[in-house]
Length: 289
Figure 1 (cartoon, one colour):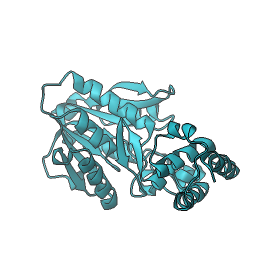
Figure 2 (cartoon, one colour):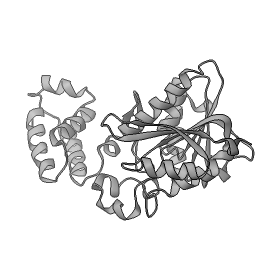
Figure 3 (cartoon, one colour):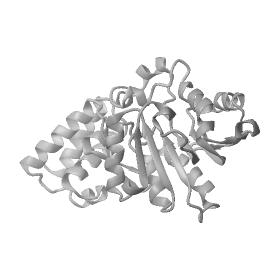
């Protein structure tokens, strides 16, 4: 079977299974198996696949047809110009979270000469921690997650990009897992923010394959924001900043609960689809005393 025949037949199969962008998905799977850039496939339409290649591609397409995420099948995903290991141990990094990293780096740009420390609260795959560490060599990053499996994945990604020596990994339930008295110049988090009752209605790639603990924000999606609002002040330096990724439609509610804990909300930035996505806040005067 030739490359073009595999693309055509597999595209039809994935389309019947309800997979979005089925041809692109097939081309990415095929390019991964043949270890070639996707666009090179267009120069190889008449190439005949070997039996081992065809067997592997068929299995990958079958898995994708069962709505297993592409990132889990190929074992990696792109994030902020980095290729990161990706598997069921942690949430697959999303493009929206790249916007969170951009906003953090913009704030850090005015402090380029300072040796600062950051906490990535709920690090998951380590995508935020690794991206910040690679962009800011003088930044010490602490990465915290309740999941030991996620911490193992974050460690792999930090090692993959040569920043493991500048990322301190902590496993445990919230801020209490950190050494007493440890404070940060920056706290950043992409917390679970999906209302529990809505998880079952998400695409199968998410609801059946992302860890529920990385999705479930409680009844209204705000449980983790409440925890951060109440507990983060003791961990943030007086001149520090808090950056939070927001779920769709949550900007007003998160801003309100932060203000109720005496935070000052400085800005809410949109993502590239125009949705309010990144909130920046600082400690109020009462929290600094």
